[in-house]
Length: 231
Length: 390
Image 1: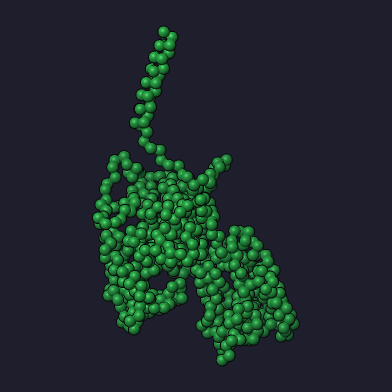
Image 2: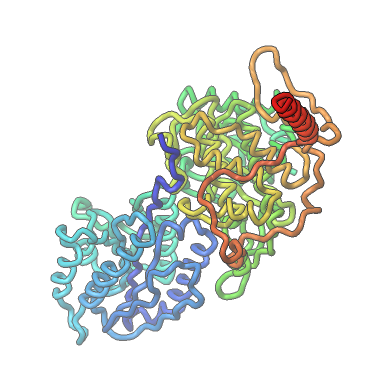
């Protein structure tokens, strides 16, 4: 019998996307948003065991979508983006870009010797989906359908968090796992963003320990959005 | 210092008698929360997700009592380097958690944040298994190789104590120990999970033992594997299992004083059976030797336990014995494991074989015998030639 190689077990990694709504309605939360991003970065840089597992990319979206942090090794990052809020809430473009990034990042991680788990996309929004003119629209559903198509092997799990003007119906329809969508109680407040990022971090800590995605069942200050919950 | 020996509690305490303070951790692994005990500073209450089973109650009672029968040096190690549980905690006659010492302040440090501020936090061993550049970015002090070896020696001493005490820990990972930049020591937590004898294999990302299947019972052999892997990662700052062995070998070539450690680590990580892995006391001894040039005092090289042996008496090394070699600090400066760690010189091929050079034995007597045999052989040949010619 040959001696086993210590790399017998390849390390799993979880491609993690944080999609942040930076439309003009988020303007009042801009400071907190940037502050919580710094907090997340610090936590990850101080916990290499988490960043070994969860590879993070940050995508901001409003009228257009920007990959503000590519899925690089977080240890190599030399500057953090300062997000600015303006424009409308164009989910269609956000889902397109997410699709493209997954197709770019998953093979890259695999080529780096990692076993790649199904990506997860945490979606943070305070409004309803609109078109480029700011009119409420259902057009995002087509792109969302392509993104989460069961025929696409790399389809992500989408976990939406909503506050402000976000609605339970839309959040529910954007969640890929029934009951794993969260809406701030009483529309939320500036603390909602902090709670979302703390939850997100705990999710990554637990997932890294368990070696698989572990999603929260409840979030302080939020209600779970589920068709099965009727009261 | 807060340690098991100073525990101010009875072996069983009621939750209602404790004045609890803020939570320092919630929903982390096997516990619902860990919180400070306001009535007894320096002590923590760890609450489990569910009530402990009868078997766990017996195990915890045995575990909280175990240090009583340890030798004094081991008990000192328990107090200094381990969060060993002191009490089982009950609520309505159910066991809901344990009381244990908090890590001393020396295991916390100021870490630099992205905006240039600092944050005081406990220093997980996770932040030892990173290179100098990353340490520097976090505001951690520069570590020499001997500093890393010293911390690893502390880890291995704790691991060897577990094995000596008949305990299986298994939970070795980046998260279950802290280290101190000032004392260059480690502090191991979650000791309450230890079992007397094999326990169910634990799943921790990137720490799985390739020779022990998931969901099977695991013994100290798994501890030996995980501790060797942890030491390899902390010494080299190489976290990837695919390349950590080569990094250890390379380091040993550059820094001969860790050759014994490297041999042990490579042996454990490449053993073809779990049973072939040498005991942890040998790793502890190799690390102690690398730090001080002498073995751990009173530590037998190999554990031999059983009826009729109640302890071990340290013996002084004999003159000329390898243990009396010069201490490490007299060796040339070793490279530190950083991005700038020098590789082998140009043109030198790095062998992939795991065998490392072994010390040359003393050959003085053999040399004399060989010379004598040569002369006898020559005389015999001359006698034969003269006989034939005659």
